[in-house]
Image 1 (cartoon, rainbow, N blue to C red):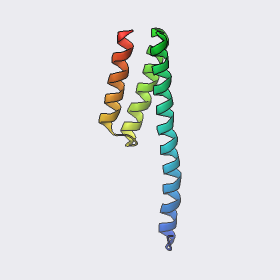
Image 2: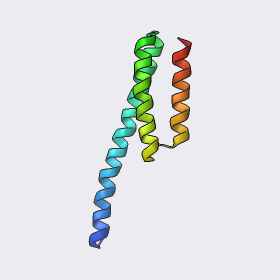
Image 3: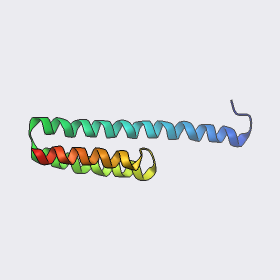
Image 4: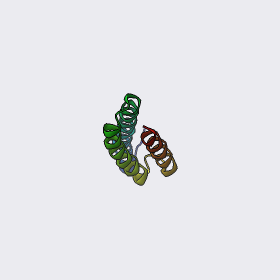
Length: 86
């Protein structure tokens, strides 16, 4: 465990940030799952709306460095192509 005051503060900050990052990653997974469910149901209107919100979420996380930008682009591209096939 940290002994210096600044190191203790960094440990606290890391805990908070890790929890936030985990929650945001989980939110992205849920958004992707909801979009895929709409795709499998064949509901193009709902899938398009969900794709937009998922895309925004992925781009935001990539910008903040929570996920890598190529990962965000790949997931967005795959979802978009699946929505267009409906």
